[in-house]
Image (cartoon, rainbow, N blue to C red; front, side):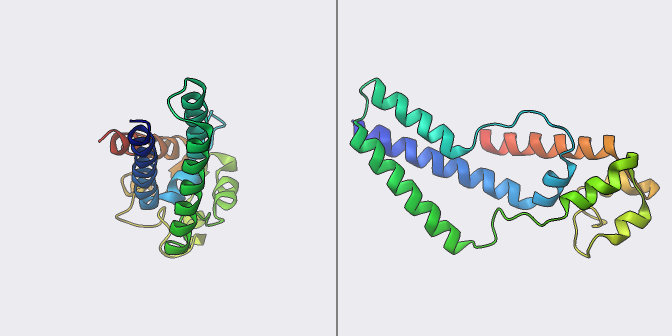
Length: 159
């Protein structure tokens, strides 16, 4: 029974993490660059797993050895996934540039043109498209984009 619970927990973390990664992969640059507030962030999956395993050991559901085995298995899986997807989760380095553009509260058409081709904020069909009618993006519009991204990610995790 304990092994089943531990397996389900590990699978849940993997599936949840994969779902999150899939959603984040869709618009990672937008999520990073639209983030202009210092609001609290949820804990990283590794921290959540550690807390859950600690609680399960404390209440006797699993042993410390089983918890350690889960951690080792998860670390091995993470390394395997890093090899399989070497560019996943890497920052594109454009966040500071966009924040610089936002110093005056607006990213102008000239500033948007400075972003590289293929950047989500320049994509006429991308997440910023509905806000580009006037040729610029405001801080409020980026916040709206960010909130839409968060809502979509949460909906995907709940599905």
